Amino acid sequence: MDVATISLLALLVTIVVSCTIRLHVGFLAIALAWLVGLYAGIDANQVMAGFPTRLFLTLAGVTLLFSQAQANGTLDRIARRAVLYCRGNAGVIPMMFFALAFVLASIGPGNIAATAIIAPMAMAVAGQVRIPAFLVAIMVGNGANAGSLSPIAPTGIIVNGIMADVGLAGFEWHNYLNNMVAHTVIAFGAYFLLGGMKLIRRRHSEEIEVPGNPDTEAANDWSFDRNHYVTMGVIFALIVGVIFFGINIGMGAFMGAILLSLFKVGDELKAVNLIPWRVIMMVCGVTVLISLLDETGGLALFTQLLAGMSTPDSVTAVIAFSTGFISIYSSTSGVVLPAMLPTVPGLANLLGGVEPIAIASAMNVGGHLVDVSALSTLGALCMAAAPKTEDPRALFNKLMAWGLSMTIVGAAYCYLLFTVLEIGIQ
View 1 (cartoon, one colour):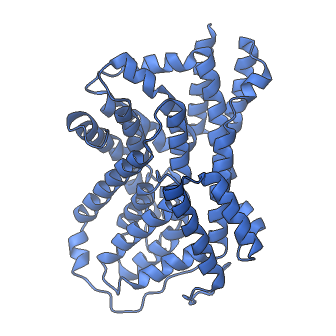
View 2 (view 1 turned 30 degrees about the vertical axis):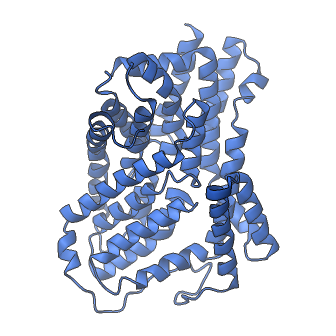
View 3 (view 1 turned 180 degrees about the vertical axis):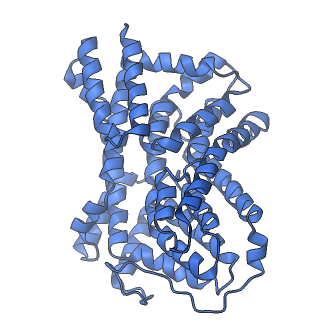
């Protein structure tokens, strides 16, 4: 068997394992890359050269800074304060949670951290106000995913880095806006289909209790103190520096994290424990294997297989469906997109007449639209926070049906926007 086929089989094993077994896929990918390298006569130093050092440092810096903001209660207080502005309007509350999840994910913590912060209070409030938990899960999950491709959020950094490596640099804001619009349209479409108009006409006159994080603040303390103002100031300075002055997001985030520690407003040890090391190493490990695939010809073979399932007219729909279906069971940012995005230039060349950014956008949107499935991290976080009055099995079934349906909805959406109308791909 030739080396290209063997390396591609290693990637397929990695994807299957990520869908079926609770084994760290990043470490598996590194081990398989080494074995394939031995078979192909590629020494270990060459295999290790595929480790994405720049991506690792960027993700570590960004997640360290926002882990400090989470550890000292800044993010919790922002979210809890915003709930008060709903003033008991049952219809506005799900919209507020969508907006909160979107803003938090966009400014740096990313979709998983934003959902982890918002879901517990969203579900608790939903139980008190009698808003369906399924609707709230859709609004929170899609809100967080709407901000997931922000240029300063972890998933956005991963996607933009991979795309830049394959010659698709400069599309950071296109990726963010395309993904944001898709999730906003889908979430608010679901909101109105699932009874949003009835909720808008209903008011909740009783006091709403919003749970907080007992490790960082008192349950009824809504005030900001020096620590929170300094934290928000550092985050704001980083965002301004990245957008207007071209500061490297990873290095800037490390400096921001150090400033918070020097000012004694951030618990560095607690923040380090909050960093999602598992996800970071998953992305880096799969990238090592993808780099080896590129070297052995396995990536070209994978690209040919994808091209064989598509035509120039159907590629966005096929790719969105395929990426979404795998993402139901596997990590979108850690496994699926790092494996799929490197094939974009080759697919565009093989099919001819297709804009590479259209294919990349279909992967990004299709992969993320399914992420409120009960098997995804976002869906699981919402289920775990559901009120005790909610039937967990019924909620699980609804979220699974939602995730599966999004493979078809995502395919249709991407085909319509990126192939028929050619919107958002220039």
